[in-house]
Length: 472
Image (cartoon, rainbow, N blue to C red; front, side, top):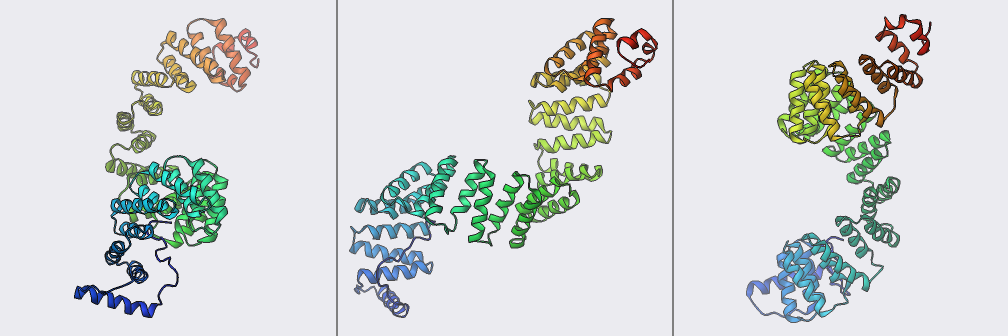
């Protein structure tokens, strides 16, 4: 229950509509005449209800204030006054009214509930929980108290406690208009995606026309990697709200995940129509174009992305990779340097820069970058191997030996043993070299062909061929 849909008219035998119209006219005539015409408390409540239900909140407040002068110690009057003040966005005054209602009737669960809702609205969730707890002690099976408690606990980053409260709410009132939705969100936070999906399905049984529920259901299906079902769920959200930009965006993500890149580009383009220029969307379009080998359009959209947001790391990185793939290494390196400027301790960015520098035959720069990667991520076998291979190409054999040894300490694979064998061979350490090559061949027999290509002269020696088990 929001603070705006409290059951305002709860006294017995409300006045009928036709008679009420006459009573309201009489009341307004008395106001205009500034007369002290008498209206009993029940009639004043009926008039206040009429105004409240017709969104005439200031008029409703005037009636309730008059009633409060007549019945200053009646908690229900102060409760209603708080509801009206909330409707006028006078939340601090509403809190004062709820507290006054509780001063006269501390056992009123509705006053505690509305106090909690208002405190939560004002950004005081801890105090809101205290109010809900008091309300729950009085009426422990009140579904609305359980619902609001769950919502606020979720905001406080306690999804397990929130889910427990919302589950009980759903047990008590299975047709609650919002509880299944909030419970689904809690399960999503708890990475319990199957339960989250089931809850969204229950919510959609109650409200099948909720575009948000269809959308969030799609998000959960995405997390479950059930992309075709996710697309169908986003389609339902868009059938209900064709301008739902987030649904278009996430539908496009799901399309990209199943390899439908052209359709994904169309979806992302729709997002740009709805939300104008957006760096993330341009970057996503660029990535989709890269997947279909359209480097020209990929570059265009990566550039659009960084033009909108010069600190968008992923776009600079994507643009760098795109340019590197086109052989535009100098520009690509500048892009990687921009990404490093923003996120200087990311080993992946330094790695991309190193690879690009290597492609540009900037060996010294590449070596410096690879070495920096190994400092940022000392357990990266691939980084140590690339560093070692590049040192070998630069004929820095002693350093290469140390780098290969470090790589082997992380992963004893065929490529590393083969590289180690090469550098040992270059240093004249033949016996150790033979042992390394044998290890490489044992792990990957195809490495024998690589050896034959790399050392054709050596392979003419039958003794070497026999030692290495090469075909004679």
